[in-house]
Each structure stands twice: as C-alpha cells, then as structure tokens.
Image (tube, rainbow, N blue to C red):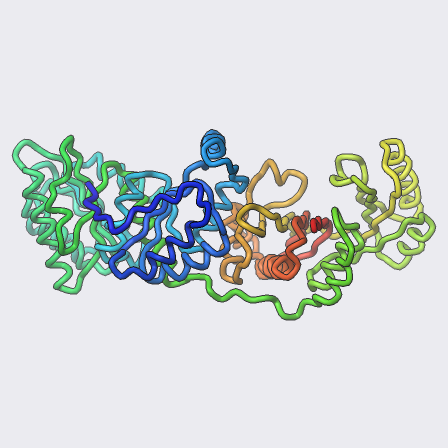
Length: 524
C-alpha cells in the first residue's frame, strides 16, 4: 500500500549512548535517505534534537509518530522505558512544530506521508479539488478536508464548462466533481488533467469505488498517465488517491515517476494533505531568528536573584519584571500598616490589597486579596482583618502589597508564564483569571521562541476570535502580549534557574497590557 524502500532501520532502545539526534544527524548527511520516519516514546536531548531537526527538514522531511500521548499510553511508556513523559500533548505538538518535525498520530498517515512528501509536488495552498465516482465518499472527504483546515472551493466556470463537454449530463462539476458510477478510466484521466488547470486549486484527491465493469488497474494506469501529463504541461498539482476496495491499491500507482500515495479513509487523506501543507510552510518559515531582547537589565536581575531560592517574594519578582521592562502595574510593598496607609495617600483609589507570607501561593483561596477599597479608612480595616485572618490560618511574617485597582472596562483577563518541563523551559499564554485551569484556552512553545511564533501562539487561542475584532468591537493589539512572551523567554535563557513564572491576570486593553499579579520560582 505504501511501497516504501528502507535505507536504514535503527532501533536505539533505551539509548545508553546513542540518541535520536545522533541518528538524525546521520540521515541528514546521507544522500540516499529521502525521508525520515521516527517512532518516539520519549524525547531525549530535546534542545539538540530540535535544532538538528530544523536543519534536516530543509533537506528532507522528518515525520514523527509519538507514542504515549494518552494517560494510559503514558503509563505503558513509563513501564517500558523507565521514563515518564511529563509534558502535555499540546506542548509536544508545539515542540514538533518549532522543530519542523511533522507529527502524526496514525500509522497509515505516518507511512503514506513519506511518499507524499518526497514523490509528489508539495501543495502551494489549502485549496483542494475532489474527484469521485460516488457522491457519498466525496461528501465525507469534503467534510474531512474542512475539519483539517483545507478548503474545497467551487471550480472556475471555465473549468466546469470544459468538464461538461465530456462528462455525463448527470455528473456534478462544482467541487466535488462527481462523475457518477459510470465513469470510465478515460474520464478519470481527462477530469484530473482538466481540474489541474484551475489556478484556484492546489491539490487533487481522487476517489475510486469499484463498479461492476471498471477495473481498478485501468483507473490507476490512467491516473499515472494524467500525473505525467499535468507535470509536463506545467499545471503540476499534488495528487493523492482513495481506492475503496477490499483489494490492495494497484501496484502501478507506486511506480516511478510520480508515485501516487493512496489512503483508505477520508480522514486519512485529508490529514495527510494538511500535513503536506504544514511541511511546505515549515520549509518556508523555519523559525531561525532567535534572539535575546536587548534592552533587559540583566545585571539588575542577577543582583535580585543572588542567593535566592524557592518562591520569590512579590517585591523581588516585581523588581525582576521591572528590569525586564514589562508593563507591570505600580505596586508598593510594606509590612507595616501605618506605612501602608502612607503609601496609599500617594496613589489613586480604589485600591487592591494583597498579602503574602511564606507558603502562601493562591491568595484568593485564603482571603489574601481585597478589591474595591475606596478610601484609606477602608484600607486600614481590610489590612487588619486580612492579617488577623491569615494569622488564625497559621501564616507568619505577613506583609502587604498595594496597588491602584486597574479599570476592567474594555479589558480581557489574560495570563502568561513559564514552566520547566522535560522539553526544557516553555512559555505559555492564554485566558487568565481564577478559572484558567477550567477554561484551558492556552497555547505554549518551547524556549527559544521568535516574535512570529509568539504571535502564532496568541492567534491560536479561542479568545483570539474576539480579540481580532468581533461585531462592532475594535480589534485588540496583541503585540504587547507577544512582547511579554519574548521577554520571559529571554529571561529564562539567561537565568535557567528560574523554573516557574506566573503572570495572572494580565489586563489586555485595545492598545496596551498591564500585569497585576505575579509570582516566580527559583530552583538551583
């Protein structure tokens, strides 16, 4: 069904001294290797593998089938290799994309992609034409294409008129092109060659359901003839096929020149084409321009981090955020209630009062945050009450954090941060607030990242459909949020001992962002 030749087959097992990046480097330099298929349970030396894969993908496709993505699969992986993948599937997918590795979850796509990416021209866009001799499969493939980010546009009127000249009057020529069950092998050839001339089509899916009289071998032979003709005529398009039969697809489909990859089910063929487009885009945008943000005061950060470990105080965290030149809200710190009131006199009301103490992580869970404090008198009452309550809960060395309350008008609560995983430091962005774990509208990427990838992360969020402008609402500028991600990534590149950063919430306004709560973990 795939007719793949094997140049090398390497099983590295538990990788005592030879890892995935080692064999990838070997195959990158081997001119006889046309594509690389990886089955991975764990990702060893993730940074080295990432940059090796980026270089390799410019020469040949790297396709990965990742085992152990479900919770049960993770348990099986752990028992088999002795290592437990702690990174989430969403992070793994981001890692693969940043590495220009084409990641798949299904064996037929895994195998078929090798032929598609090396023997067929890559699609220039996501516009697909579907040619079939049965309406039902054509509809299913159309749905599968739409579900995988592909478009099935109507063919141009000129192409439709040309199709009507030789197809039966009962045929549908819009897209999908349903030639009906009586379609002959010659109909297949002429239809493929005609549709390939449409400039608004990037790829063609051909479906064949065996009727009583037409033989699969004859259709396959005509498809090969069509593929050679459209290539020589300059109308070359990506061509894939579905032969819906209990027999294997005809062997002639896999012969040179231009082997035609075949798939069994609609979702397989649509996913394969979507992955081919992903590979095309990966070659064009390989995320090479990594850099450190150059206006960060790294000396000030180093002095703040000196001899620090564990969860940093809010004051130290605030100091680092200021050195990063992040848009953090004005924040004052004190342990003394009288000084708290003095600081408030120089700040506009209403106020937000927070408390911190060793071991206190989630302020809202223990009543360590108060909003809508309208004057100094209310502030004093809130401070006394908050301190007494925390003492009753067993907290000691309590201090206060004071901010002017940020306007929520036209603001969306967002979050950004950094966590350390087995793939290295990763940045995360998403909807913020106390329900962030419930909403799970997040995107992530492994450090280092680029400005382009930071923007892609934000655009991949569900809430972006609102942020880009919804009905009469003006669009929101996401560049301040992307800049936060870039600066966080730069921070942990220089100071890898910072293992966790949580900026939540960040108020995103149409033209700016403001960070109002923050915490940071250091592990030496």
